[in-house]
Structure formats: C-alpha cells, structure tokens
Amino acid sequence: MSSISADHSSAAPAASAAKVIQPAWVRIVHWINAVAMVLMIMSGWQIYNASPLFGFTFSRSITLGGWLGGALQWHFAAMWLLMVNGLVYLTLGLITGRFRKKLLPITVDGVVGDTKAALTGKLSHADLTTYNYVQKLLYAGIIVVGILIVLSGLAIWKPVQLQWLTALFGGYDVARYVHFFCMAAIVGFLVIHVALALLVPKSLRAMIIGK
Image 1 (cartoon, rainbow, N blue to C red):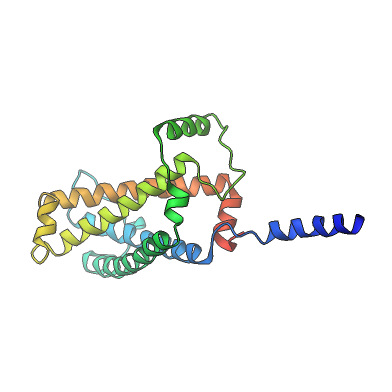
Image 2: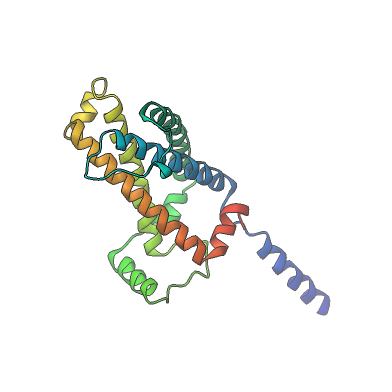
C-alpha cells in the first residue's frame, strides 16, 4: 500500500507540473500580435499628427517613423504582420475550438457579477485555464475591434479601389473616426491587460512558458 501511495503522490506533482495552460501556438501569435500592435499604434499616432481629427497631437517621443512617409512605411509593414498573424489566430482558434471553450458563454449576469467581484477584490484567479466573464467579454470584444480596425484601415488606405468598403463605413472621414476609436479601444485594452498581468504574475508566466 505504501509503494502505491508513493507512486500516486509522485505522479500527481508531475502531472501538475506538465499541465500546459497556454499552448505554443497561442503564445507565439500572442507575442507577435503584441509587437505588431505596438508598432501600428506608435506609427499610427505619427500618421494622425499629420492630419489630426481632434484638437491635440501625440508627442513625438511616443510616435514611430519620424515623419509621415516613415510612419506609413512602419504602419504598412506592421499591418501585414498583424493581418497574417491575426488570420492564423482566428483560424486556429476556430479549428481547435478554443474560442468556443474559452469565450462562450457570455451572460449579462455573469459579467455584472464578475465585475462586482473584481471591483471588491474578490475575483478568484486560482484557475488560469478558465476565463471569468469579464475576461470573456474583453477578449471577445477585442477580436471584434481588431477586425473593425483592419477593415477601416483598408477603407482609408484604398478608398478608390475599395470604395464599397469605404462606403460601408459611411465614407472616408467616418472610416478615419472608426479607425481612431478602435485604436483607442485597443490601447485601453492593452493597459488593462498589462495591469492584470502584473497583478496576476502567474498568468504572464503561463503566456511565456505555457505552464
């Protein structure tokens, strides 16, 4: 009996240690997306400065490209990286069933309950394999925003060749506003995402080494 118990006790930690929370493909696309988003945001701010939509501009210290032409080159390079990587993420997320398992269902009661728990410091982060309702809403929402920012970007980039897409957004000027507010939403998401990663360090570790 003692040897059997010993076998089980040694197997349990081994199984626990080998448990993968974030598979390799998720970690790879996550970090590529992170780099692409930062490059697009910083170069996008420099592009915005050339023709501001509002009564402010972004400091040159947080922009990329140095001038409009340089910013456009960075923006287009990062755009292709983000689009290809995003398509890989969406395809694998659907094929593997990750989206269905991780992001569904999303209920109003669940979101309200988990939001209250988060604000009062009572939201548990013990099980990283399961997303709470706030995480589900944020991750599902940022996927939609990501699709919108790519489409509105294409509408701005090729308003003549893709005039049907530009018209779908209500015209070139409206597409610019949609693009800007999607960027703002992504920046907000990144701030919250990084803050939560710092508050729950094991989630950051899981996104680096998977366990």
